[in-house]
Length: 335
Image (tube, rainbow, N blue to C red; front, side, top):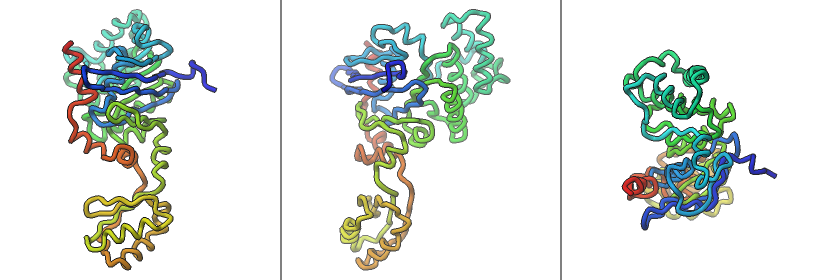
C-alpha cells in the first residue's frame, strides 16, 4: 500500500468557480513521486486553471490539494519553494542574456552566490544552451526560449515541475527536442505534471494521462490502457451510399466487430484482429451491393479515446467552444 510520501500531488474534489461559471468541477487525482503525469484536453477544458490552483496562483473555491506534502491553501510559500513552473506564455526578460535571466531567478529564490554559478552552469548544460548563455534572449528562437524557461524552472531543484503546454507553437522538430528534454528530466526523478492538447505529446511522454472535459476528469490511466479500452483496431471504410445502412447492420452481427459508427461517407469499425477479418468485410460489402472505395486500418489513438468518452474530437471541441475553463482566468485577474 502506498503512503503519503509516495505521492507528489494529491487532489480531492478540487473546484474553481468564476461567478456562475464552474471552470474546474470536483477534480480528483494523485501523482506519484517521480511520475510524468498529463492533463489532456482542449483549450478551455480547465487544465491551466487546475495547474494554477496547484501552483497557488489561484485560490480554490472548494476541495483539497497538496503538492510535495504541503496544503496549497495553507502552505503557499512552502509549495512555491518546492515547485518549478513553465507557463504557456514566455515570461523571460528578453533584454537580458540567458545567464542573466537564470541569475535573476536564482536571486529571487535566495540561492547563495557561491552556489548560483554552479547551478546555472548545470541547467544550461542540461538544456544545451551553454554556448548561448551570454546571448540576449531577444535573439533566441522559440525553441531556445522554451528550453531556457525549463532551465529556469529547475534552477532551485524543485520536487515537482509544472509544464503548461510545453511545446505550444513550436514546429514539429523543435517539439520533439523539447520532449526529449522532458524525458531526460523525468529520468532524473523529477516529478512532472504537464498540460497538453496534443494527443501524440501525451502518448509519447506520460506515464499516466487524465482526460479533462468541461472541467471534469472523465478518465485516468496509462496511454496504452486507455487505448486498449476501446477494444480493437480502427478500420475505416469509404463506401458508396447505396446499401450503406444494410452493410452497417450486417457488420454489427459479426462477433469480432466491437462497434460500428457512420462518419459522413464512411463507416468506422472497431475490430479485433482487423487484418485477419478484412476478407470477411469485403465479402459482406459485396453481398450487400456496396462498393468499398478505400480502406484505412490503424491502431487506436488517444484521439479515439477522447472521441469515445466525450462524443467529439478534441479539435472539434476547440473550434466550437465558447469561453470556459482556462479562458475564465481573465475574470480572476480583473478582480
